[in-house]
Structures are given as C-alpha cells and as structure tokens.
Length: 394
Image (tube, rainbow, N blue to C red; front, side, top):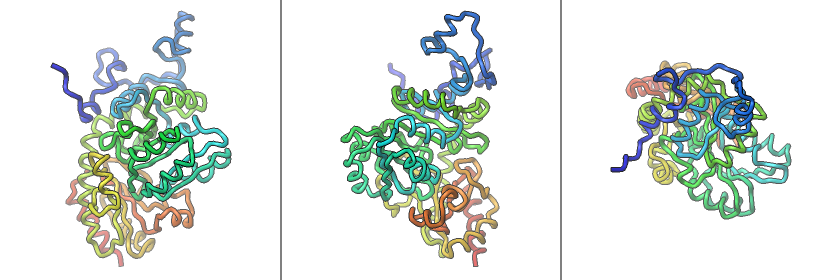
C-alpha cells in the first residue's frame, strides 16, 4: 500500500532535519563555524565545485542553515531553496539575479514599502523599467504584461491592505510573453497558499514573520525551480546576504509549530475582522475572509485559509490612531508581524515608513490605517481589548 501524502502540519515538525542530526540528537544543532577542514585536497576541491556534498565556508553554506532551507523547500513543494539574512535580501537578490538594464518588471502598486522602494527608486537607477498597476485590477495587469516583461512580481495578500491577486491568471499571462512569476508568500505562508502549484516560478518569504513566529530571528528565503534557485544562490553567495546559523536554528524551532500558530491566528483574525466591521468608529476593514472583501472569491479558491493579518481604517484618521494604540493591552506596538503575540501599528511607522504621506496616499494607504497581526491569544481577550481601546477614542 502506498504511503498517504504527508500533511503540512507533519512536514513542519519533521521535514528537512534528518541529515543535520548528529550524535543521536533529536534537534538540529547550531554549527557556528566559519570554515570546514579537509585533509584530502582533492575531496576539498570536489566539495568546493559542488561535485560532492559538504561545506567550505560559512558565507556559502552551513549545516544548520541548510536544514532550514530543506524544511521550507518541502513545505513549499519546490525543487530547491536558498536563504538570506532578511526578507528584503531575498527579494532584492532574487530580482537582481535576473534583471539587467533594459528589462521590464510588472508588479502591484501596494506591495510592502521596502519592495515598493526597490521598484520606484533602485531599479530605475539601473535603467530597468517598472510598471505598477492597481492591485486587483487583473485586466490592467494583463494588458501591461502583454506589452512584454522579464518578471511579473506578485504579493498576495498584500502588506498592509491584504488585497488579493489571482496567481493562476497572472502566471498564464506571464507565460504568454516568456516572463517569470515571483510571488511573495509571506502573509499566506505555505500552510494557506502554494504558489508553485499555481504555476509560479519562485516563492519568496520574509522568514522573520510567520515562519519563525517568535519575533526573535531575521531571515528570508527563495523557493522554486532548481535552475532559478541555483542562480540566485550564486548571486547571494558572492554578494554576501547570508543567513546566520543561530537565526536558522530559531527559525527551524519556530516552524515546528507553524500550522498550529497559523490556525489560531487566522481564527482570531476572522473574529476580529467581523467585530470591527460593525463598529461605529471604524471606517473600513480589510480582510480576505470577509465575504464583502473585493476578492474574497479568489482568496477562497487559491488559499486554504485567510491568514492572521488584517488592517482597518479608523474614523478620525491619525488623531484616532494616536488615541487608540496606547490603550491596547495585549498588543505590541511594533514594526513586526506574524508573531505569537498580537502586533499592531499604523502603516506610516511599519510597512510603509520609507514612503512619504503623499506616496502612501497614492498607494491607497490612509494615514488612519492600522495593521493588525493577530497572535495566538484567546479571541475573547483580544476582542475585549479592542473594544476598550476603541471606546477611548473621542
């Protein structure tokens, strides 16, 4: 009898670790070694050129880091994975691996602020054309892709407005012009969304967020086709945005509870979004799990859950935010997300702090927008906390 398919909850715990376990240990060790020694110079050379498994130098590979990469590769069902020091390193290195002057990128207007800066500021310096379309306007995006491009870059759900893009539809448009599709899967995680199954060429993560889940380790990753990932790895090993083995260990430990955490976070997010939707001091609520979300139907088809992230706009805008945030008792007011603790903050100090108020307005992000990363706390306590903080707004 064939073995049944292994579910992601089990993969999160067991996958990718076997080859890294030593001395009978049940946990992957932290290998803090810059270099690895070889008495046989011929073996050393074969490892150095990749003909034989092994490690040469910490900027290139590390046993603890490789265990993290293998676990994520299996969770995303990719052919290969390489890691980075941060999520922004994963995004920038992956783009710069393939883009050269004269190339064109088509993406969304309201991607994460750091990503938006790459598109609006850094790539144009290299004579790389970037076209940003209204997020969710699939017809507009198809028209722009049809004009020709090298990369179609998607972030779905987006940060912080949690808008949804139809991955399968954009992949088909990209393939028609020979373009690659990159998808930032940070918000959805592999628990809720599998972009590679939908035809994407590369999946990107800020592992700092939901994958690690404990706000104590920075990291990023790219997963996808082997030939693409090998090129990205080569760019990264030369440019040096290497993941630290201590961070890799913390991320590995965090990923063991990924399914449990995401399940509770999205349960809380749904309850909170529904509560906020009917509150008199809330202008709008953004969460793909709400049936009146503009692309709830797309999210329902391509995701197995709606995630732990939501955002909402307060009536009274920034003045209301100033009154509301300090009153929250069970939420870190900080520029992070995806952790076991609820974390809250306005876009102007979190996702889009790099942008001017005018730029945020052009991206459809009001100054009164609050990004809310639901933690794993009891939902009743979070609701009560929100209620009393909203009551404090004059």
